[in-house]
Length: 86
Image (cartoon, rainbow, N blue to C red; front, side, top):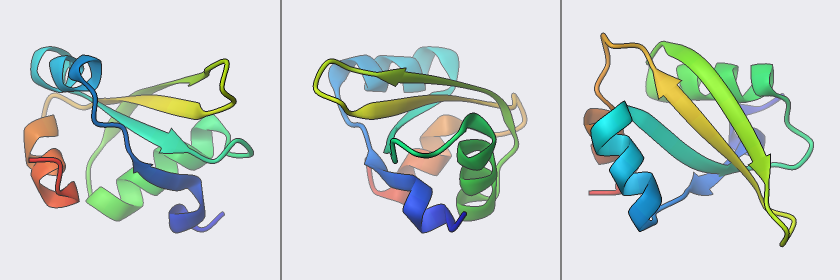
């Protein structure tokens, strides 16, 4: 799967910002058809980081979010700056 088809956009909310700072996690809105392995590969390819864990959630509105735990070697703040969140 093309990484640009998997990741739609970053989720910028108070909760996602708190996760970014405290737990080194990024939150993205992703395609409903994407699987965890697709999300992992897309993030690693696009942002050149190592992903340790991916959790997904489909909210009642039908939007799928991916909570991505980065390896301790990489800082989520740096990736967020690349993405344009900060």
